[in-house]
Length: 425
Image (cartoon, rainbow, N blue to C red; front, side, top):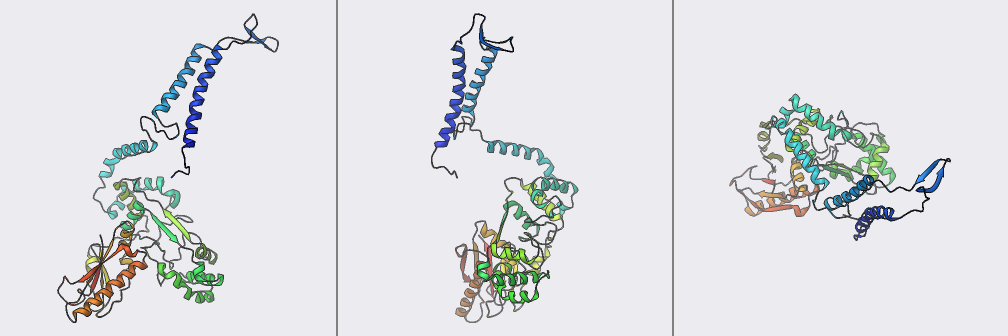
């Protein structure tokens, strides 16, 4: 958005541009009409070094012609192309359109190369020497400026070869990070923690989570203060990929060294990091190759086997558990209880990401068909509310959560009926 509230500067720039061109033409006309005082020998009377005299000859016609052509060309150019303030030119040419056309032409030329990679998985592309050579060029030209030519990052920019992935290191998570970008924000927490001593104690406790050098006495004193951090980093400090909150138990600190002074600064001042979105720069095929290259650098998490989801989808007989089945997160509850199973944050990561992209989280409760119907229905509501609160704790706004009336589509009893499902719509 412009900082100006009127078109004054547009008119001003247009005015001085046109006045400059017309002034050149006027100067040429005046110089051609004005007669200087000359001596009988057609000199101006100026003499240098005794013999060098200034003649009063008219301008050469070829020079005058070129000068006029230049001025006319300038006027024609300003009519056709941008140059007069906000006037866009009669041809409507813009740098953006020119760039887009050149990119499209370039993508069209390389399309046959990428066609050879169509249909291949990330793992297959990572094993393809040609794909990795192309991925290396894409990375060097676009990513190395921040993450380094060896992908090991630098202060403020993550190392892509280790196992610390704030937003997830599986192929689809890396792909989403590249396509959509990420914004990670550590809010200033000094005031919430307490005094400067409290902040130092908490910093030492954070360092103790990864066995980094720390003051054990201060760490013990800071343990209780970690409750201010648990909402994002988890009660065990192992992070939350749905929020981009890093795992504090690895000893990897992207924005500085693992020392007390740095952690204190982070707690007091916070930090915001932005990974830009690249979906407008690359084609889908280029995205896939770049994803495979980043994943193949060694830090990515292996994709789960096809059998893994099916094994996880079977709930224990009478214990809380959670599973992901074709994008739907299924929470199973112990009989008569509404406690959410551990691992809920990781299971809901894709749901949270989908809500951030504008989708709704739909929470459906199911009831057991045996026993007291009213009690079962109330218990189903409490379980749905528990899952809703879990989503809110992960940063999902309440107006982005749709609660559906408890239902029983299974017409049965047991763990399958005692469940809550979460999906995107």
